Length: 164
Image 1 (cartoon, one colour):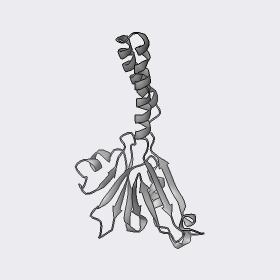
Image 2 (cartoon, rainbow, N blue to C red):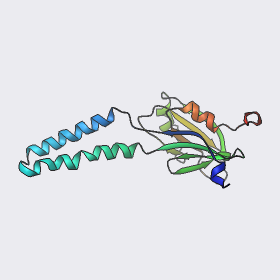
Image 3 (tube, rainbow, N blue to C red):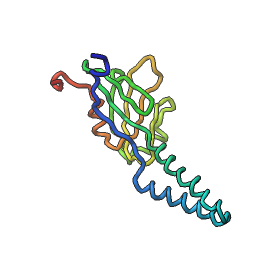
Image 4 (cartoon, rainbow, N blue to C red):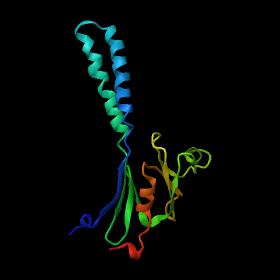
């Protein structure tokens, strides 16, 4: 059995943009294409639609690409994956939720310049992950999450009673 067979996905979420952004993006692209269409009669009239309508679809999908995963090994170690970044769970000192009302302060005047931040504006809440790693100058991670309580629970260190 290889090491990947021993890993268990404890938490997973993908931070999609809100659903109403998709028709709004297509509407803006259609209006822009219609404006260009009015100035280009004939065979070239369809060209702005072909060029402009795929752009908001690509842009909104690109904005929605961030995933948040917590993976645990059979020996209770594991890692947090946020986008392409990886964090071993054994360096996590403390975890807390940042409510939407405190997000502005956490990303503004209280933000440490050395912090790792993965922020999505359409997600109201965040999770603060304080690190205890002498080899890493990063004091904490701030990660957007639609289900912060579940992410905090997944990052919590399991106690011997939690194991089956």
